[in-house]
Length: 472
Image (tube, rainbow, N blue to C red):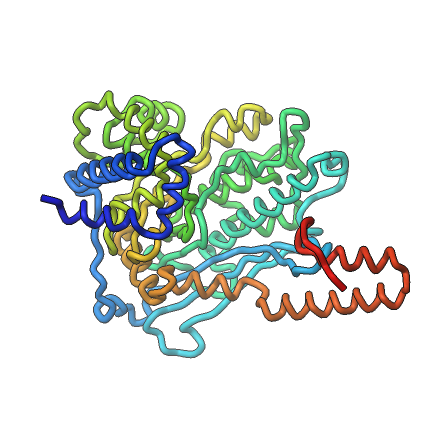
């Protein structure tokens, strides 16, 4: 007799967005029937082992009972982005981070909700005094994009610190009963955003003013390299990795619950399922990675799955069939269910091996996130939720994410983060109007010039891609 969960998995395998799994099956050399059979078999197996160990939690949708905070809980929603306008030849002008704070149940116009933001122009980021490898680097475009992305990541964590220290718009500090949400991962694979290489190990430092604006908790630093600063290391400390690690450790040691909420996880990502299988089987690889390289213990105090030597074989099966984390947890979780948080590894020592000593040492103190997947709707893939510190409020905070997401049933994403996402961006009507006005003015200018080459260049600049054509 087919079980209820088996019927659900069979139905989920027919969802439109699982078509991509079947496409990937072709690349593995598997036929569709076998691929579906294997995916179904192992999804059922993982679900069973997690259920047996009470590692899948359930939330009931109870909006009338839940939304009863009476203005006593402050919810901070933080999102970052780039300041840019979609005009031909226009580069990104800066980085912007916004904070939307709301107090559910507070009906006062002055204190219920508000918006705070921080913006920095690109020209105010990098310290260009002295030698900068940007001036000679042939991979300037790639490094420029990484610099922008890394700067945004730093500013988002710095915004958490600023709000935690009550140095933004509001004078009252958040407490352990409040919560801070980031739109996106709470921590990234950091080494890839450090702009140095084995050929040129000197990364350009951030400007001192920008650097100081990030560390709102000064002089209460978290890392020894900041507490005992040497003049020789001053410029190295003003680079991405040390700052990112310092801010990450502040959040890790804070008593204010802070979470990163990811709405669209990478389908091929398997970092969570690797951790899950490693913990269920207590594999030697997981044990070595945690206890020796990253120095953190087991996330789950649970009984090991029989046949622990099979753990590596199970990992090979998941790798062979490319069953990424979002797909796996969409199959095995019901609406309102989430996984007991598990610590994953994003930082790997080999990524730091070619860097200078001060950056290699950062690896040892870079925090690693605890991750869960929460299914808010049967019609959307589950949300990935990360935190650097699992507090006693963890399950209540996941409950908050779920009920916030149910307020946008067609979107299935927390309302506060959806709000700050819109507030922190330049409105489309403004970008489109500015772009259209710019294009019209540019075309008038080149046409008035009467220069055929200039007119052709002007028309080409409006082509969206190299294979497009623009007919006059």
